[in-house]
View (cartoon, helix red, strand yellow):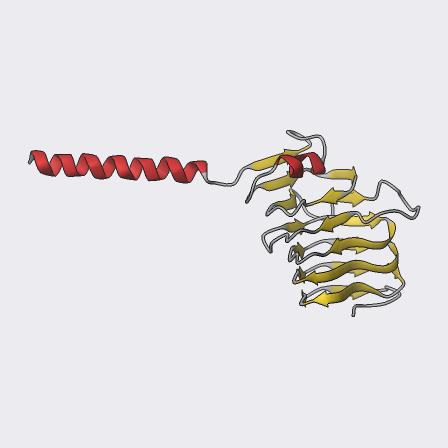
Amino acid sequence: FSSCEDNIMGISKVILGILILSASLTAATLNVPEDYPTIQSAINASETGDIVLVAPGVYTERLDFLGKSVKVHSSNGSQTTFLRSPDGDSFGQPIVVFYANSPTTSELKGFTIDRGNSNHLIRIYNNSSPTIRENVFRNLTASNTVILCELGSPLITQNVFASNTVGNACVGIGAGNATILNNTFDGNSRGFY
């Protein structure tokens, strides 16, 4: 019986070690503004697989995903969580950028973006392939596009584009292989190309 008990003890130690290791590999949730004052500061502090969870409110800032595999989600959806350009209605820079090989696990979900004026409000480039899901883009002005994909393969799904004034399109694909599924386009000066 002692060798059987030794085997069971050995197996138990291995299982315990695996459980401890897997617990250390789980994604962290970074809460805004509870733990981090801004969405960008939470992205800066994030590690691969983390979730930046944003409480309802108005956030006036630019987001750069820094090529990280991080999900930025609102906790209550687009009806209560707003992302706006620091430039307001004046012409400025993109509100969100994905570059440097941002993977499909980079995600922006559950925001209303309703104040901004730029060439492109969201710019995806340098082989980035993020997911942009369940957002509302409304009352924006873009001399070119609301979302521009250059050399990437993003998934753009379940978003609403409403009452935007755009020069070329709400969603533009300059180069790449974007998947555009189940979005609603209503009252925009142009659709997508």
